Each structure stands twice: as structure tokens, then as C-alpha cells.
Length: 331
Image 1 (cartoon, one colour):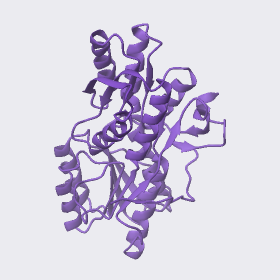
Image 2 (cartoon, rainbow, N blue to C red):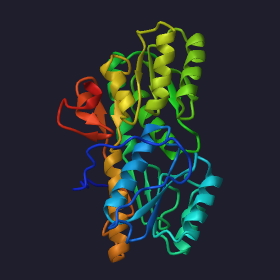
Image 3 (cartoon, one colour):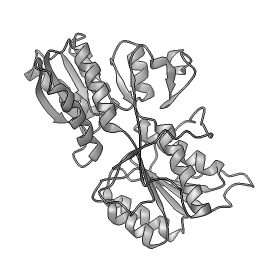
Image 4 (tube, rainbow, N blue to C red):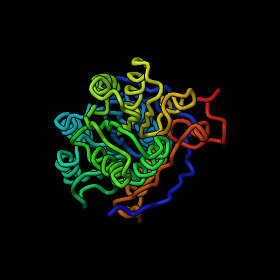
């Protein structure tokens, strides 16, 4: 079971610098005082997705502020590549690994290998299927985020009409949890009818292509609920290309791109994941563990999400709250 936590870091990152889209190790400049505590590997899925790019940036920046060097790595959602990266980190004598993993089942062996080598792992965003292997698994409350989004989606649709669901990668536990949360709400509403459900694999391009095809076979659709913002943005583009401004599209993650779309009248809502908090906590807890041998926190930690609509989209930037109405996305 995940324990809900309201952890807040004093190390709030006010802005995330430009993100790299390259794969593999990114060279990080260090000042003379930095890096004395050793090297931490920060491994995430493709950083072309701003969610993962921001997560890696914030986790690595926080680790560096605490006195570590970092290797910033990208497993490309490939479990075999992920294992290779773990082996490289072990060979390079990393002191810890921060990970957004490439598969709930497939990742267990990699994390276990690191543990056997004396290297603790701190997981963010995606959980794995075994406890006691990682020191921490810090995730958004995906189920809670899905239910609040589904409730608002139904409200926007007047609690009736046909809709489409775009799901994430089948091997990703989060895709399943979000879909379950959607259906635990929508299936209880008699007037709501799902006429199509198809994966777009977290991809904006696939979100566009799948939506384009499904709209042709389901011309009466009133709404689209997607498992992440990237797919939702692809769906929104397909809706606009089809001249269907009557279709309600909602996403999930709280990316800046989604916020901009909401402000411009495109997407209607998203559930915001506390990426900054998760990433900061992974680095802070890694430092605590390396310094004292314990975090004094449970392995599984869950942080609630926030429903974002046109009413509050200007209150968030780079997955974190800012002073009300001051988000650069609204300037």
C-alpha cells in the first residue's frame, strides 16, 4: 500500500532550465565545491516528453545542490537498455540511482542488481511489482488524479454522450491505474458511453493518428479522455483538423504544453502530477539515506494530484505551483 504524504521540500526549484532531447549521459558542469559526495545516476524515459525531461532536470539539479555529481540517462522505455544503464552505473560506482522505470515487472532485476552491489535506488512516478528492492517508490496518486479528472470530464459532457478513451503503454502500471480510475467514475454514469478505447502509447503522433481514425468511425463522439497530456494534445490537434470544436478533450500530467492549450481554449482540463515534489524528494531522500543509512519514511509514498482547468491553469508552471496568475504560460 502507498502511504499518502504531504512532503514539501525547502529546495523549491523556481524554474527548470532548457531540457536536452539527447539520449545517454549529459555532461554536467560542477563548481569546485560540488560532487564531493559521489555520483548519482538519474534515469528516465525519453526526455522529449516534457514530463520526463522536467523530472530528470529537477532531480539532478537537486542532487547537485546537495553535493553530488550526476549522470543523466535515458532508457527510451526499453527495459534491456535500462539494464545496460544500471550495469554502467554499477561499474562507475554510483552511490545511488534515481529512476523512472521502463516496466513494472522488467525493472525488478535491474534494481535488485544495484541493491546487490550496494547501490540504493529511489523510484519516482512509476512503481515496480516488488517491495523491498528499492529504498523508496515516490509516485503521484494516479487513481485519485484519474477520478477527479473523470468527474470533471463527465460534468463537461453533461453526464451523457459517447466518448473515446486513449490509453497509455500497456506495460506501464500507471496506464492501467488511470484507466481504472476513469472507469470507476464514468461507468457509474448511465448516460456516458465509451464507444472506443485504444492505446496511443503515450505518443502525441499516435494520439493524432488514432483519434483521426476513431473519429471517422465514431462521428457522434462528444468527448475524448486521454491517459496523458501528450496523447491528449495529439487528439486535440486531430479534433481541430477535423473541424470538430464541439469535442471535449482532457489530458493527464499537467505539462506546460497542456496549460497553454487550456488557456487558448483547446484542452479543457488535466490532472497535474507534482513532478517537482517527487523529483526533489527522490534526491533529498537519497541524500538522507546515504548520510544516515535511513530515510525514516515508508518505501511507498503517494502524493495527491490537482485538477487544472481554465480557472487555475495560470497558477502552475513546470509541474509546480506558482503565485496565482503568474505562470509564464499565461503571459
